Image (cartoon, rainbow, N blue to C red; front, side, top):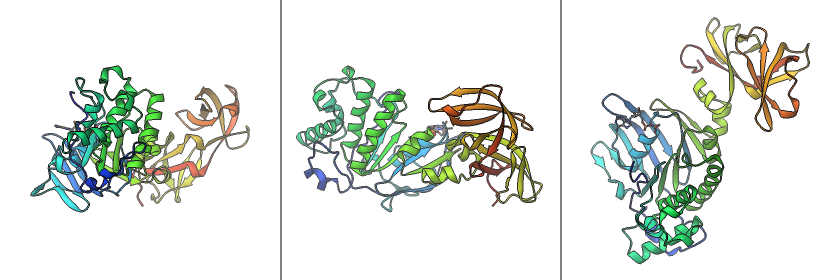
Length: 383
Ligand code: ADP
């Protein structure tokens, strides 16, 4: 798609006051806005892209929007930016309605920046002009000064007069970032900003972007389908599925107390087994675990985090045999045959603690690593 970095002109309401701050080391500070989605739905002919989404992003907060492809993340960003209209519901910036029944503030009046995954720089413009592109409300001299400051912040001021083709992929991404922060948006929306980069570069760009977002203090939504990225970057994470927000909170809370099995799977590598509830406990070949409010006789899915499977001496715990081990660096993934389980059980253990293939061992489970969900409704707990 052509110019995928859709750069929405317009500066946050109070940004003119900031122009005096001409720091060339730090990213310029913005005035963050609170962004509210109030019961927003977006329907297309045959699809409901967003299904009654309510979400609040606090001023200066970095929220990671996490979810599988097609769950509605991009649509939500586009609605916040104003390049898409909600079918119903409202969007508010600092409690002022910008989209809703009878109200629509156009993108250039919102002070919201949107950076797409396949950002594209204009090949026929210098880097300075690429970055200055969204600053057309300023005088030419002011725009160039701001653009240069943004390029300096991402370490590329020396290429200001060059054209994009001489840059590496990572450098082009930096220019896209400079272009996104230059107008000092009060809300910055980034759609899978690192997906085009290789893993090493992604890591460093992630850190750099995070530092810049903290400096600018813009309210930010970063879209990703990578749970680790969401945990690393987000002050909070909102998990989406099929057009809905499934759960919102700090990454650690979503990890520790997932509302359903989908959330649990997103944040942890799990073993899953069917179980039935008896006398308030889920009964499995690995032992009995608290039923999490499920009633006796109901069917459950018991999930055990891979790092919660403990290898002990034969004769202790449940008997098991080592089938295989895959080294993943510091840890190894050990595949175990366990009496009573149809599928192999996976244990994540320290590389130095891997028993030999074929060894007869005992298996125990750390009860803190067990999550019990109902089997019949997508894994939402009954309680
Ligand atoms: P994500 O960003 O999470 O991958 P999207 O927001 O792009 O998801 O899409 C959500 C759903 O809405 C998908 O099923 C997609 O096919 C559909 N969709 C998005 N835009 C349009 C459109 N312009 N017309 C019809 N369907 C669309």
